[in-house]
Length: 243
Image (tube, rainbow, N blue to C red; front, side, top):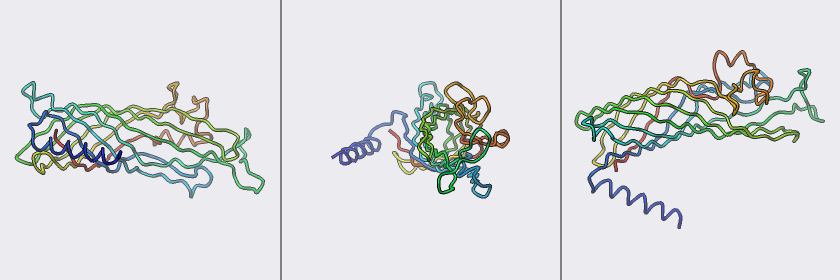
């Protein structure tokens, strides 16, 4: 019944979007590839370092044409959320002397990490149309929110953290009308983001992080290339619905 209700609501939205005058609200559903640094099984062995240059993502954006009330048509206030598909993996456990901790079978004990990351963004987009083709440019403030779980494979600890970062994303793209209600979109963006921080505002890849969220992580590497935050180019494609 729940899925049937969702289908009925979606069908109603589509019919309304096709048959009625628009109020200036668009919904854009899309996915793509976002540049960010992640890793797997580090520093157990250098060969296991996985400097993933990016992560797939799924997202939804709402945009409202407030410019229609100010003689600036196609000027949109936009709010969106993306979920990157990335994996942190494992980091080895060490004692206070820097020696690896092993189990009874001689296997290295590790910290296992799992996370849910959400990028939310708020900003402005301007679109310029020539018939069915439109060019868009814009900029948004971006907030990254990460819920992180960390547990030891030997069962000695299990903790959860709330991490975050802030940045700015500039965008350029193309819309192509597929009718009165639907449009296709290609979006290219460039993101600049600050370091990932804990609830106290301390960088989690620095010595200021007293919780040691990422124990024994090579901090010098992070200074050159920040981990687990979006940065650089990303590409998204999507379908938009006018309401």
